Amino acid sequence: MFKNLILWFKSSNAKDNKKTSRKSSIQNAPMKRTINSSRIGELGEHKINIQLDQLPKDTKYLSDIMIKNPKSRTGFSQIDHIIVSPYGLFVIETKNYNGEIKGGRSDKNWRVNNRFNMFNPLKQNFGHIKALERVLTEQPDLLYISMVSFTMRCRFSIDPELRKIESNELIVYDTELSEFINRKVNRIKATSDKALLTDAEVQNIYEIIQSSNITDPALRLEHVAKIKKE
Image (cartoon, rainbow, N blue to C red):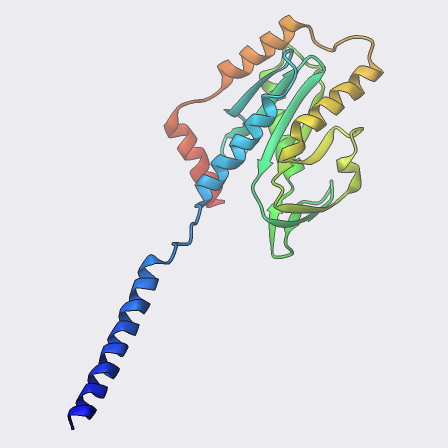
């Protein structure tokens, strides 16, 4: 009987140790790290800013510009980035999607992973350019280059012309943004015997856009709320 009691005690103790060990391993297991969407957006913008900092010194850029746009349903256009170059204005829309991007220049909507639609970003950027034209009335003959930047988490199934440097509408990855801008500038230089804008004109355009930027937090929140509602 005494021998049976010892065996029972050992068995019970072993079960308790197993439970404790299992509990300890759960407590010490590394937590799965997640990054929320706003943080992903911040990282994406940081990557874009690194690209823009690599541009030539004769260019200037502005980020997160909101200007009046009577043609927009919200009354405003919010532009991610504007590059003011002696060889034209690069208007950049950034997208933070994951997966296959499918669409053509004239399509109203593009498909993401064949699961949902997004409004054609080139048409969206065209609206931004038209809003800028209303602000920059002193420069009616400006050359505008529309660029839409996607993260490397995407793959393109788009009109191949939108990847050719001859086009004034370009779809690029965020890591190649400065490369495409420099290639486009070199392309324009090859077809023009001088810069399209003087340094003074570049500075003037920069200041006009900057002074037109709406910074009122209430108006910006109202703009975002209307977009989300639509």
